[in-house]
Image (cartoon, rainbow, N blue to C red; front, top):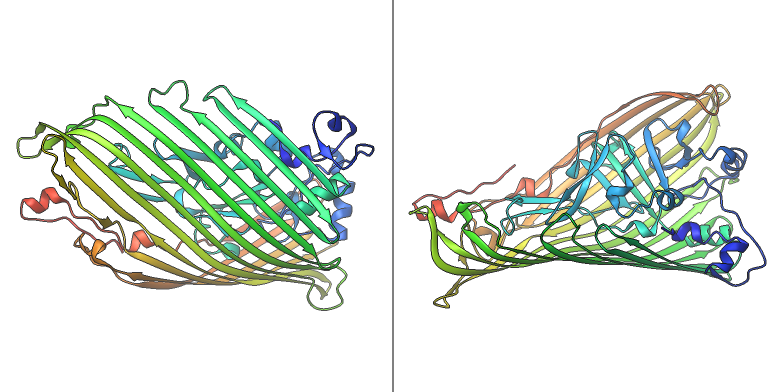
Length: 552
């Protein structure tokens, strides 16, 4: 499997095997190490060059929000770069953690890959973000085992073909990232045009790759183009995936995925840049299940067809200032604005024999159900991060501080039409629900977080103390409409706040060996569907009672 990020690192041989560049008379060599998210200081650059021979030096920013070698990081963090993706033939997020102990990815045959499990914690207790933008939360409701009866919408909104690096942090990280970073944090970083152009050593380069997976007839094609003119660096990346069901599965399933990434980086001067990013992800899965005998409580299904389409679009604008030689109090600053629109649409048709609940047996009446379900997650936000480096009292300080603000809108409308295939009669009162309906009311979640962290080193850099503190405020406001009220449930607004402290001690006697101890407190604010969810069981309602709830 060819990985775009590494294929662009040109040698004279790759010129002959398909790499398209402006010329082929020079060769370049990219560092095997990776500095993620922020430009390194000259001191960090020297360290990279001096220690690159062993191939083990990795830089992480997820652990402390500042560039730091893994050996000196006060957390357990793994960095997976483009070279790893190439060597390990990584095809999806499940392959991404195949060799990571204590980390796994859940899979659902109907709804696909779900989320990361880190040391036993999973779902919305693990924060997943792309370029510092949090991905939508997972959503589960109803019977997620029986096709057409429940929902298990995961968090697979990103394609590994456009990864520059991925970082997996084990343990609480709420001090730096707020809610959901309870069990750990997974951070994706996308391809960077400036980094790739500098590795190539020329103003233009392009690469294309194709790979095939015989397990599911999967074909993946990727194209990446980078170009520099004057002070502007650009990148365009496109990846296409097509696959079918695995050979050991009987159901017919076809999927296709498109991923597009575009970046424009304007280098204002040696220490300031403006970055504009457009990213679009679309994944469609068509499944046909026939002659499947389901539990009698749901009747007997003779045909089930479903299409699940998941897409995510984001726009982001960032300004970054990084000047290690600054004479002012400010050495680093980054301001970031973004908008992300994520949607999942499920459309399915199910033919079955209706069930007579009084007689407790299926009826001879063939029935068709056509269902349409949507899940919407839109987030608009911004963040600002600053860093000040200074000496005081015989110790070196790296003070990081900032603020995160965002507002997320979530909606879950569902509709269903049930048709009697003998009489042609239709109804939207299809057990167990009365349609149209919502599993929870339309919700707006406002978050604001303020954090402060100081990396203190002394004793010629062998000893380190890293205290940190974050304050988060969370506010949920709802808009109840007729579709949710039809459930018979009640709903309410909700707000809360939390402090998240951390303290780490680091001792590094040599560059290859370090010891650390860490205390950290993580928290997770309740999700919109955990505060307000409701349903009405028509079976009980027809008997004179109803089942509805509000979970708070």
